[in-house]
Amino acid sequence: MGNTVTVTPAADVPLRLEDGSRIDGETLVQSVLAGPFTNPPPLPSYPLDEQWRVAARFDKIERPKRGRVPDVRGGSIEFTAVGQLVFRLRARNKTSES
Image (cartoon, helix red, strand yellow):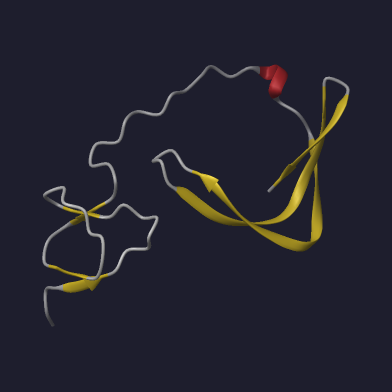
């Protein structure tokens, strides 16, 4: 067994070596890999507000949809929506894919 690995990051993945240098193409790695942040900033949080607590109905969709959503690190995550949440907010119908 060896102690090396060759990595090829996807174009939209900011992969870095332990020293902070970016890996842009196929690279033989003999050290620790790191994501875009070694010390990520704290995520903001807010007090709960009960007016936004709603009951919802889940409706499955016939054909799941693929999509990308931004993440907190500046990248994005691919997901598959398999349905939608249907709810009322302030007497208006709303939907949210999930």
